Amino acid sequence: MTDSPSGPTLLFVDDDIDIQSAARLLLTRRGFHVLAAHNAPEALTRITAQNVDLVLLDLNYAPGATSGAEGLALLKELLALRPHVPVIVVTGHSGVSIAVAAIRAGAADFVMKPWSNERLITLLQNTLQNRRGAPSEIHGEQPFLCGSDFMRRLLEKADRVATTRAHILISGPTGTGKSLLARRICAHATDDVSSLSIDGESCEALPQGGDVWVIDGIERLTPPLQRALADRLDSATAPRIIALTGSIESDPTKFHPALQLHIGTIHIALPPLEGREEDIVALARHFLRYFAARHGYPEPALDDDHLSALAARPWPQNVRELRQVMERFVLRDEVNDTAALVPGTLSPGTLVPGTLAPGTLEDAERSLIETTLRRHGFNVTRAARELGLTRPALYRRMARHGL
Image (cartoon, rainbow, N blue to C red):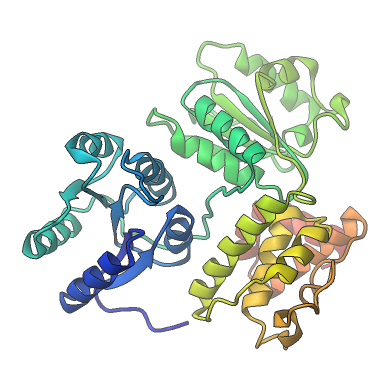
């Protein structure tokens, strides 16, 4: 990794390269470390990969866009990922009305184009001094990204119900992003509510507090706990449930009938990654930018042969596996993966050496856990956080696989 800058880090999101260059020159002279992003995907990657103290956010990125809708949508995503990072929106064509809408959506302030350099610097400095909450810290949170129309519609459904009190069941194979989607729903809820994370496998008693319960592996709750939860949900003070499960259709007998009625109000089924070419490409590009920034490595290029190989290969561990493959791709010098950069040398299942090969789910899970533990120097806490498990749940899986 490169040395951390001494001054505050500012992320400037604007599609105009000339404006980016002028702003970088001005802000660097005034002691800021400037990160550039030219669109929403780059901005989301930057803010998840690096510590950011402040965001300067233009509201339009597509050619000819003047509505500010792109920027307002990105503002929502940024605040969900980093609620304590102040965002100052930049508006020109969109006008003051959009700036006011951004303030209502959570922006700290706004500046009009063309701006006065001195006024901009004063605004940035005052915003940093008045920042609420703790400084931004990287904690592994990732945005829920997609590239296909199908997944965008699914995400729109999740965002729409996020502001309600309806219980939500999120199902899907391992590694498809169920926990990420649950955290997104919690972040997009309008009420200031407290949430609790519950591991169904290790839960021994239902908690007493919390407005929202995110229950991972709800089908692993014991039958008495499932019955108790169903009874709790009949009460007027019941918590909102966001339940995560591998597949409710595969074995519906795992659920108490009364509980299934409650949690099945809204069902969001995440599909496997295999065959979703547009989503694979969008996620691969995001992870390349993310790990290049995290490790201080240059971002490798993906040509058509690379993308075709990624789209064609099986993904038994879904997005979680793609993330690992892209990290190895960025770190090719450390794993002697020079062949992976040569066009035409890739074939399905061999993008990088050492990645998970198709096999049984047990073999895939063991390989994933072992790889994650090694990456974190067998620090169970960090490995469990990356895998989306509690420490007790990870210990049980380690014991089951003899790790």
